[in-house]
Structures are given as C-alpha cells and as structure tokens.
Image (cartoon, rainbow, N blue to C red; front, side, top):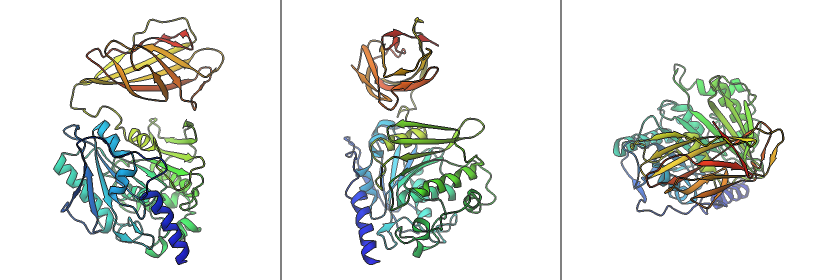
Length: 436
C-alpha cells in the first residue's frame, strides 16, 4: 500500500507542483503574489497568498483558487491562468495553501466532521476568513465571491458552496467529488477510499442533495451555481464521480437529471447544461474527452471566469454604453445580431450569426468592417485577422457547421480611440448579411 500511495502522490505532485501539461506563466505586470499573515480565524493553520491586479474597480470580485494534493497556493498561481485573467478583468485572486496531511501530501480537509459543519472549524473556516480579509483590505465585493480548484481544490470547491451558500456566488470544480463523499480521514486517500475507489459514492440524487441541505436545514436563500469539469480518462479521481456531482447539485436546485441543452463549445469538451424555469443555467458539466487527472488545461480557467460572469471589462466603475449594430440589410442567407459594451478606451463585441438559408454552412468566414480607431486585442469562438479595418473571422473548427436555421456566437475585445460603434458590412462566405 505504501508503494501505491507513493506512486499516486508522485503523479499528483508532478501535475500540481511541476506544472500542468499546458500552463500560463505568471502575468507580466507590476502586481505580484503576496503572502498574508494574520488574516483572521485560521483553525486549519493555512497559508494565504493573494494576487491583486494593478487595474481593478473600487469593489473587485474575489476568486478563491485552490490547488491539488501535494501542491501550494504559489504553485497554483504559476501553474494556472487565473492571475492573468485577473489582470485582464480586474478581480482579486486568493490562493490558499493547505497544511493538512492525509497520507497523500497536503490536501484540503473535506473529510473531518469539523470541516463538514458550517463554522465547525478546520480549512473551511480559514478560507472564509481569507475572503473576509480581502473584502476588508481591498474592498472586495461580497456579492461577487467565487470558488474554484483542481483535484483536492475541486473537492473543496463543492465543499465551500455546500457550507457557505451565502458567501459564494458560484464555483468551478475541476476533478472534484460531491460534498460529503469522504467518510473520514482514513477514507480520504483517493487510491483506497470508498468515495473514489469503491461503492461509497453510488448514492441517489436525493441522498446527495440531502447531504447539502442537512448542513443548514433552515437556509432558504439562493444557492451558488456550479460548473463541473472531469476528464473521461481520469482514474485517480474516477470520471464516474462527475455524474454523482451532477446528481447532487441538480437535486439541490430541484432540477431534472436530463440536461436542458448539450453542446461541444470546443473540440473534446462535451458540455451538459441544467437550467431552471427562468432559463438560468444553475449547473453545467464538462466531460473532457481523453483527459486524465490533469485539469485545468489551457482555456478552461477562462471558461470558469465566464461562467462566473467576470469576463467583461475589468473597470466597471467607468461609464458603460451599449450599442446595437445598424448594418444595412443585405440579400444573403444570413442574419447578424451584435452588441457592443464600451468603456474608457476598450470594448467587447458579441456577435450572433444565424444561417437563414435552406442548407447547412460547412466552414465559414465572416467578414466585417471595424470603425476607425478600433483594434481587436483578443477574441473567442473564431480567429480574427487583421486586427483592424476589414476583418475576417474564421470558424474555430468545433463550430464550423451552422445548420439551416441555426446560429453561432462569436465575439472579441478591442481597443478604441473614441468611436465605439458596432462593426458593419457583414458578409458570410462572401454573401452580405441582414441585421436585426
């Protein structure tokens, strides 16, 4: 057993400490990772690091980003993309470092009876103290606090949302497990536990949901939305646990086990969404085809930040304007709907391309003209060139087909010198498009 545990620890350490398969370097700016001591009640004996971007609003959002077993806050800072996204969007990132030994390196405590009670002690209380510190010291917005993490950190993400639904607005758990999956410390090491290695995780949705509800039976407030990620080839924390987590949180929200929509937002990312009666996605789950215990990889942190609703301008204290395109209607088999949100010297443009023809479009290029002084700095769901003037947006491969009557959403962020008008003169594969 000692040999197996050593191999498992080595595997996780190589992923979390040595760096993931595709990682981002620390952001290039004057901001830096800073350790904080004396941040408040700390029964878990944890260490706290914080990354505060140079450019941020008066009341920035707060993202708690948690490492896997054998890792550390600084390691997750340098091995994930959250800090670079904080530079772009102006939120503060808290990087806790677990100090609990569980026979598998230092992991976040999601197994003890104290950690399963609201205010019971151990790591959850320490993490809430860190959030409170950022709210006090940096003016963090208490209505925009989020949790995310990988492996042990993903497990703690589910944990924090169950214990403190009044603190966290949403979470994104990578390779986690449902809340209350581990019976105790002896059950924790993934290689030998009933949760990750046996039948202890095979519960009904109602049983999983009850585990969350029993934490605070009198709670009637809103529950945090949750995004779940798991690799289909993960054997350390088995892929089957993704379904158990879906069952838990859909039951907590009173949702059907049948997704309201499914899609593939990127090659290999199969997404299931579970929306409520108002159309709000409360739970979404990503099955990453062929991935092992190696998440998040490139682009996944950005998807988490978008799920949190933090992927807009990083300076919301400035005036924001919304402009709808007024492109002259064309005669082609396509329709364009676009919206621009502008601030200071930047803007984002969201564009929906609808195929109004009778046949599917297989492979597309959308041409449009940017107003003078606008220059694209980044984009999503397409590749853009050149950055200004007459631009061509080409499909990203995974969204190359637009069925008859179907649509695709793309967008970009750009700088501007004063003209914040929407793009104009749209043409899909050379055919002019009408506008709404």
